[in-house]
Length: 32
Image (tube, rainbow, N blue to C red; front, side):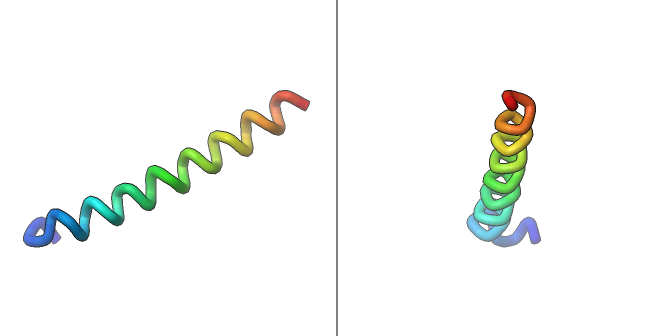
């Protein structure tokens, strides 16, 4: 895994995107 930094970077970025989406959804629900 550590052999390919580019690969881990893309995977990490994907995880962050998913977390950001969930956070936005939670904020929208809280606003209601």
